[in-house]
Amino acid sequence: MKLLLTLPILIPLATATAMLLAWRRWRVQRALNLIGVSLLFVASLALFAGVWRNGIQAAQLGDWPAPFGITFVADLFSAIMVVLTGLMGLTVAVYSLASVDARREAFGYWPLLHVLLMGVCGAFLTGDIFNLFVWFEVMLVASFALITLGGERAQIEGAVKYVTLNLFSSAIFLAATGLLYGVAGSLNMADLARQLRNMGGPGLATTIALLFLISFGIKAAVFPLFFWLPASYHTPPVAVTAIFSGLLTKVGVYAMIRVFTLIFTQDAGFTHGLILWIAGLTMITGVLGAAAQTEFRSLLSFHIISQIGYALMGLALFTPTALAGAIFFLFHVSVAKAALFLTSGVVYKLRGTYDLKKLGGLYQPAPGLAILFLIPALSLAGIPPLSGFWAKFVLVRAGLESGEYVIVATALGVSLLTLFSMTKIWAEVFWKKRGSSDGVDAPGLDCRPRRISCELLAPTLLLAALSVIIGLLAEPFFDVAARAAEQLLNREEYIRAVLGGGS
Amino acid sequence: MEIVLAFVVGGLYAAAVYLMLRRSLVKLIFGLVLLGHASNLLIFTAGRLARGQPPIVASGETAPPAPYADPVPQALILTAIIISFGVQAFAIVLLKRAYQTAGTDDLDELKSTDT
Image (cartoon, rainbow over all chains, first blue to last red; front, side, top):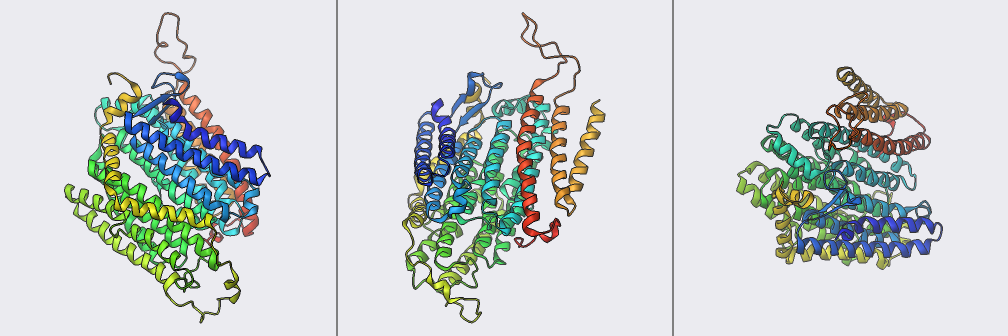
């Protein structure tokens, strides 16, 4: 089991190392890329199966006993997120084969992608708060390099904001970790949970909790800390945007859910009440920001923000149903969002632009693509029977059960606006006549290849199909989420798995 | 001693944020560096200050005598310094690149990707 816990980190590490050894041998790197992501996906499924059968798993690295050494823990929530990482890695790595240009490949696109996956898996699996900081940095450095790779002016400008705000967030994270160590004298998350519970009274713990909230809030791009996201996410190649949208903000949400269910629950009325406000405002600002956009990927970037609000809503309500909804939602939104970005990349291949004003008339030459876009788009808006419907349904039901009618109304209203936004994209890209009046439309654009390669279509199709499957067979997926939520709320189980024996 | 360090940490944070709010790219990087220092010093202070009390466990004991210099915050700071070294090196190269591609070091001019 110990090996299974570390494999999601070791596989990308080994893959990235092997790729660096095969520098300039692109065919070898591409083959390694496929082997690496496939192994990672299999390992993540194996880890999930192990956790599902045997409960929470913990491994003490270097055999130092629990609160002293570094612990790796996989509960169901972690395992679900690792499976998600494997899935995103698989789809984006295949998609990249046909969409990343030779120059970016020459500057190390493949190794960077795998280092990013390693950082993400590490963040999901670690049971130590300082170690979480380290994995965040591993992930960030890889993402810094990926976002600037290519060095176009827009990329560099976006990266300045991305790098600055993420470093700022890391500094706050570090300070909060230091203060937490000063208060509790431990860094192991399970031990911290126990120490803070025995301390009696919230005291400094609430202040530290808010520092964590700000730090993870910047990484998750919540209101009012999201400005770096729409300024940077649409600048790199679409494969990079897809994996960022599928994983990076989700790591922020994961960290937030982890610390606010395990460690900081002393003053839940205040902290979770605050998160509820943030959740509502994040949904609204995200979707309103999207309404003003006319660039395909900027529009989708604003929707990332709006969707983060729903996941936070689940955390803020803090009931078993709500947390199950949040976990279900995180999985659904990563799949749907990545599918949308990947489709936008296919549209770019066909027409050579992301500008909605210049696009149009794609329904006639590519009706299949139009439907491929429509599935995740409607899923994001929450139309039954797709996955988004169930995710939102559970969250709304949890909201009604807790009597939080304002957030329920907000969530439903924002869903409508999301639907408006998605139909706007669909109408502009596929339905309307190709704008010939604005003159910008160079006829040369039509000479682009009509055939879309299978490396681009297969991952998009897989993600869209998954969205349908989750929607049609929602029950098993929801059962998993419900059990993961149960584990999150039953902290003793986690503490016992890590520290062993009596707590 | 804690009081003095508390003011130093506060001063470093203030200076860092002030520099980051300026419009110059160079001041931005200085701000980031100072921010890292402030956090490191904060961890150092939060881990209790004790001079001349190494955390050495005498034979037959299970814990070192009461006020001892805790090695864990120092280990954390060491890790954080190494990480910030790498990240800041990247940031400096990035900002130089930004200066070269945009031809300006004024952050207000780097707005083409904002919405």
